[in-house]
Length: 284
Ligand code: NDP
Image (cartoon, rainbow, N blue to C red; front, side, top):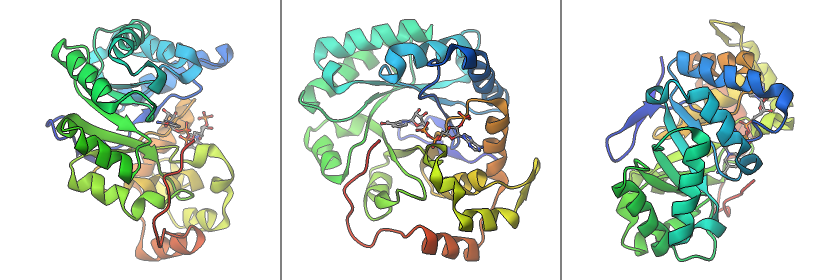
C-alpha cells in the first residue's frame, strides 16, 4: 500500500513522511506529538522532517525523545539556517542538532533556504559532514529552478539528493517546471505543507464533495485525506504532513488507500487551477 521513493544514492523510503514544525512549542501537547510520531514509525513510516529553526530547537528535542530508542526505524531529516551555512557554522549547527536529536547522525541535511553564504562553501561543509558520518546525504529547500541551476553550476550538484518545497492544491506552481526538472536530475521533491497547514483549503466544497465518494479502512474519507492523496500521486515525491495527534496520523496513513479518479482530478483542476506559466516559487 505504501509507495516508496528512491534517492539517487539508492536509499529508499516511504513516500509519506512526517513534518514537525510547531511541535514542542506547547508543552501540554508534547506527549501527543511524541505518540503521533511513534505511531507513524510503528505503522512503517520512516521520514521525520525537522529543522534547527523550528521553535529554536524545540521540534528537534521532541523528535529526539520520540526516536531515542529506535533510531534505526527513522530516516531523519533536519535543516541548517542560511545564516549558519558557513564552513564553521554548518559543523556547529549539525553538532547542536544531533545533540537535540539524541543521535550521532542524520540521514539527510538540508540548507533551509538560500542566503548570502556561497553555495560552494555550504556544500563543501556538507561533504565534510558526510565524510565524518554525521549525515548520510544533503540537499536544499525552497530552491526554485534558477537556484537549482546554481546548484549545478557549483560543480557539486551531484551530491544534492532532495529539494524540499511548498506543494499542495493551493500552491501548484512547481508543476510547471521545478517538479519535472527535479525528477530529471534525480532530485527527490519533498512537499511541505501538503495540507495547506490545515487552513481554509481543507474547507473547499469540491474537496468535501470528492471526499463523499471515497472511503478508507477508517471509514468515509475526509477533505484532508483527499488533499494528501492528491499530493502523493506525484512520482519521486515525499509528502511530509504534520500530525499532532495519533488520530490525524492514522488518517494521513489511510489517505494512501485513496485512488483519485479522472473525474476527481478534473474537478480539482477547476477548483485549484494548475499553473499555465512560470510562477515564482512560493514559500512559507
Ligand atoms: P501541513 O500542511 O502539514 O498541515 C498541518 C496542519 O494540518 C496541522 O494543523 C494539523 O493539525 C493538520 N492536520 C494534520 N493531519 C490532518 C488530518 N488528517 N485532518 C485534518 N487536519 C490535519 O503544514 P506544515 O506547515 O506543518 O507542513 C508540514 C511540514 O513541512 C512541517 O511540519 C515541516 O516539517 C515542513 N515545512 C518545511 C518548510 C520549509 O521551509 N522547508 C516550511 C513549512 C513546513 P494537528 O497538528 O492538530 O494534527
